Image 1 (cartoon, helix red, strand yellow):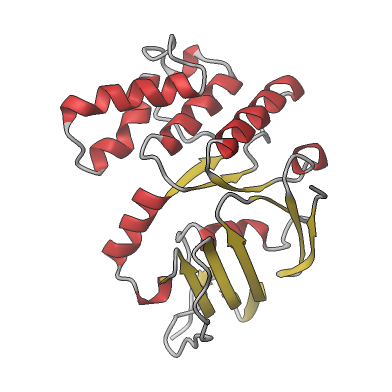
Image 2 (cartoon, one colour; image 1 turned 30 degrees about the vertical axis):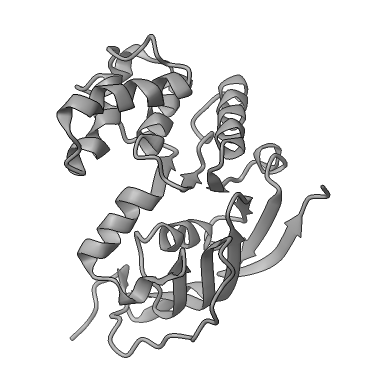
Length: 252
């Protein structure tokens, strides 16, 4: 049977590479990971035998040209996509052994996501947008409001809770998206081009906010095409053709 264009290859027969036990401060560990898609009659190897370790409290930027695999990498790290081959552990837990419900729980409890296009619900206020993950998690309605207010105050929007997205600037919308990403108090924050739709000033403010969240203890991994954003990270991965070409750490 032919596979639809753009569809991932089936995981049937997928192989996994054994990983040794990692130190307690390792939150992300991938070994020999590839992600292959079928495009018509051809295969596209979006990730090609990638290995990576990220420790608790790291601030990592992923860069590379279009098609280099950086967004696929972020999707795999965020458990939004699964490797065709290789092994991925998050907090020592083998992702490939988890059921769909368990993967959803990992995404819900351990990982926050921030996207270039905000992904806010236009008819809802900032507070309601931030509340959505709490509702989906079945949090007590009596405590949700306090958690929402805390998250919005943390991103500097405590006075804008009742504004809808169309009443907010681009930078403020991204702050709402960040508040939504951190309201469940995840340990890992993944951001895909978080400043891509913003002007220089708003983008700098978002980077400063992400740095502050990192200082508060979040492990931060972001994809960016902007070297001015990447220079704030403590570690920069440059990707090309589905591989990590360079892995550079800043001097302490």
